[in-house]
Length: 188
Length: 156
Image (cartoon, each protein chain N blue to C red):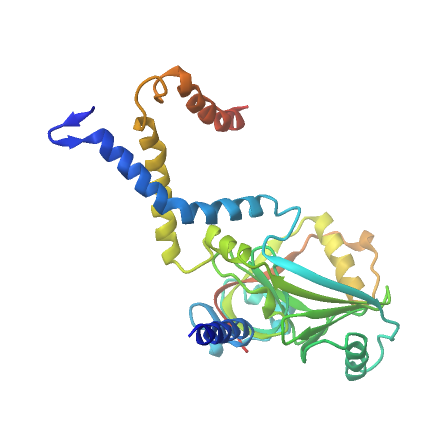
């Protein structure tokens, strides 16, 4: 037993490792789930589910805006009240709704596309935290979490004694592998 | 008691979900309405306004869906818009703000394009206006402009 004075350092380290580990469960779940979600941002939208409906729209672009709006609302009858309209170009007209949805008309292609972005429950909130997009106070918490992770990593080196200790090759090779992977990516 | 809890939870959820779409949203410093300049004026002679504090207003017609790091504001002139761009995470513009009115105070910044980029940009611009242009006549590279904001107010 590593005892200096009356303190059992081995036991203290194990206790702190256990309790800080418990404390970090919530943070780890948030960062791990959002980490995977954001890693694959090229394959999917981690924040929103995009509802997209495309329909044929044969109206001419020279119709008055009011008339165009009426025809579009007939084409998408479940739309919300109109919030604003915008001519993106001579062939593209946009209609924005109160709920954040929008219709984009392409007169050249004779199509009208309704798009609505719905937040992915949990993912959006987790990603917001992961990317530090929340209030400034979150930076303090995430710094503390990073510090606690460092403690968990270092205290793990002194958790077990004997042949399965981190300092013996029987399990110590795992530390070498874990440390080598990032180094290989950096230098090779 | 359980029913009361459920009703309360439902009520809170309703309030929170509607507030996303109805509240005025503020980012950064207060908007300086006295420095208001129309987007068409800014874009007609952008070099005059470079690095000066200006305030623009208009309808939000586009939002960055990945990080909420930019919004496009419709100009008072047809087929024209100006992008407000922030560093990722400095301000996060909600995707549902499309169609809402916004005011933004900041400085106009130039992005210099190469000759090739200038040609592509001008072809795209002409397309939006329903025109065609001969890129052979384009011999000078141009700049495009965006607003770097210090304060943004998205109205209800």
